[in-house]
Length: 174
Ligand SMILES: Cc1cc2nc3c(=O)[nH]c(=O)nc-3n(C[C@H](O)[C@H](O)[C@H](O)COP(=O)(O)O)c2cc1C
Image (tube, rainbow, N blue to C red; front, side, top):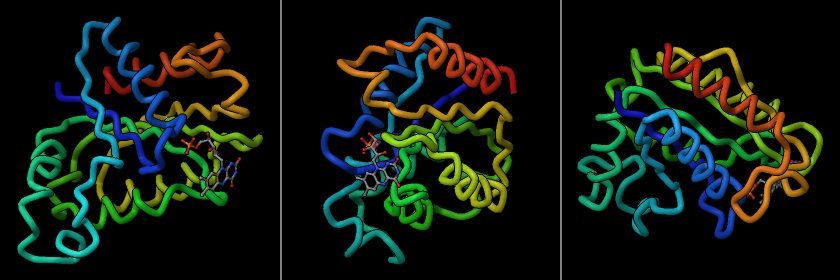
């Protein structure tokens, strides 16, 4: 079972990437070596030589291969202007269709500084996953006021860890 955690922003110093590594450590405790795909690692020529280009530049090949080899995705989604980051949509648009996602499994965890926990963002992205043919787990943690509860790579809110664990268990079992 190949699981990839997608850190869905390219912002430097993002909580999303920090949380992605925390989630990776929870998978490891369950004996699963999940990979982290950080959208900050999209190639520098992504917008000029990858997105909407055919053939794409070789710089994207490793990322496409990782996605193709993945059975289950866990998208860690920050709330940006009441939706998900635009780079996530561009990433999806750049991948091969339909083989990148069709028939695969997925889950989402949302986080925000404010009090929505990326609720609407995950709802928006679930429409896209549905279109792509990804079967999504029902558990969808909404981690509000993230800066108060998660810092220095450590979760200080036990209920958040429990919600995340439930999502991991559902995704593993799916
Ligand atoms: C472009 C941008 C838009 C944002 N919009 C919202 C928002 O609509 N609601 C909210 O609660 N937080 C918003 N935030 C704050 C993020 O939720 C906060 O930075 C959180 O730590 C998760 O994002 P991060 O992974 O970039 O750190 C925004 C942040 C950025 C960079």
